[in-house]
Length: 450
Image 1: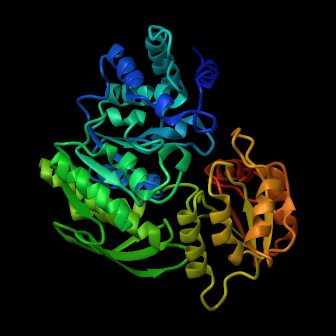
Image 2: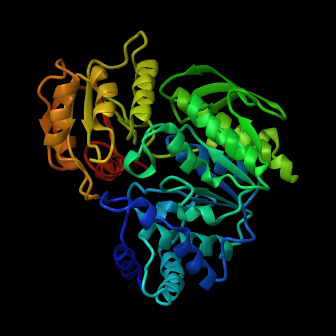
Image 3: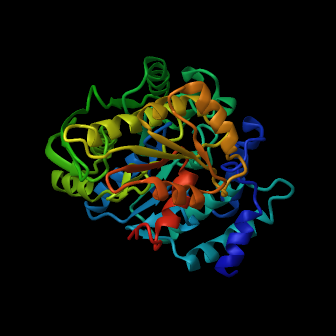
């Protein structure tokens, strides 16, 4: 099939990333992906893997691990979701996205298996995960890093037997699917922890940590906890970089630098260092030189990404209360210290209807001078701007009258028509909105993104 035919075929599957009207425990069952992979000769087996679950920071933490291992000379595959602009972003090896030709070729194999799966067909995520397994096996990667899509226990990526299971900070998300308490949500996330590996966890709320500790104890798995076993200290930060130091289980790393901004990224980097150190339990040694180089080289688009100055334009995919709180804190830390770096903040925001709209606005409205509400055209579950505006009115009496637009391009037009060169435009609320904004900004009169 051609690449366009491949995209059309992928679009024929139900995509749970774009919908909310499904039963989680009925739709997410490992039997389907297990059967499909069996038909494909189990391509996920025989590759050293690292599995990442959590609520926030999954992609950034995976990107740090990926960069460190590449700088150690390994051939590394990375599987993440969702994408910002192209399906190809989800699968990469050695900083190269999977090619259109490879997607077409390996999707032919997936289609062959799917055609034998009567009557139940896989979801988009299950089909694309199988494609990633096939691609990484064919390319003979030394390591494959997998980010879960939703939850962990029933996620299609949970077919792997990882050397290291990674749990990033857990907070309230997808409560209609994963549970209404941190204990329930953490139980789904901790489902990736398996005997024979090591678990590295970011700092957690007590309720979530208790679940992780019990899961590790039951599986006989060693737990390494950032903030307890991996100690980090932020040294300085500005609009260019974070500088910090980390004391790990096996070494000290002084004056590390990363272009991923925010205190939460320092925590993510420390967790990633804990992961590569944990590989020593499997007789895999990563040198300090590779840690420094990997942290410095790590990139992750759409996470406090400054894409323009005069005015500043920041893209950030914060889509829950905890991430929005971290985003607000990063804005204050980097931009609001004397001398003040911007005059007013213009918030361009679109949120999915199944997210905590109230919680996100409660964190971001207080730092915003102008609010421009929009919606992504990429997903069915994008909340209507009028719905977000109603919630904004409940959150803040001081937010003023927001501008409502029905697409991201119109929202950017509005923001640039208002913003002066000393202002900041913050685009957030959804990775889908950020992806569309990034695509619109690329090559446009506002900003050329490399």
